[in-house]
Length: 286
Image (cartoon, rainbow, N blue to C red; front, side, top):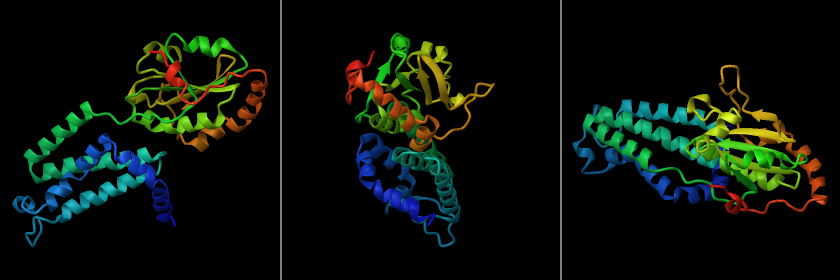
């Protein structure tokens, strides 16, 4: 059953997987992820490669290569146990496949290893994962608007995500946060985002570190009456984030969204200012 559950989940999300894999970033990543396999199995190329197989067949994996690939598979399965979205699952597979390729190419020929590593570095510097562009009820803040908006109406509860575009965790969480905004946004409960990678003053003001070492990205903060009430992940005395999984179920439970939503809907009887999908495109401040 433990093996069937991930399989059923993959089949359920298969259309979404195809949609993502057809994007140029993932197409290029997949080619790089299977590079060693292609080199080792392509006739005319593999014939000139070295091998440690007893039968001398250079077009098949030797025992050490199989061992490396099995170790990679175990790491991917462990990492994907904590993955939230399809993008995270695919991203983990691609990332560790590239790591395995680097090891395998260096073991095969140092020149091939250096070439592949150079390609990986160039790809990392020039190509970024596609950003989420789906529907959402989210207002985007900058360093000048966030304080005013949070203080504008004390009756409105805000959930604000502090994020950075360069963070893979934030990129993966974008679709989850968008889905929550579609389900729970109302006149008295609103969702916002602010890019602290771009607005450093906001990072300092709200004490959310943009450093990758702090593990504070993304951070979700609940504001009521303009004051912080709840924050996830929590931060210890040394400024490090306490490990927390940003699943939809965890957020609904920790932030008590169902009860908040029922209370906040009552405000809609007196106000008709709920955001419409994709309004963030017109209200985004640059």
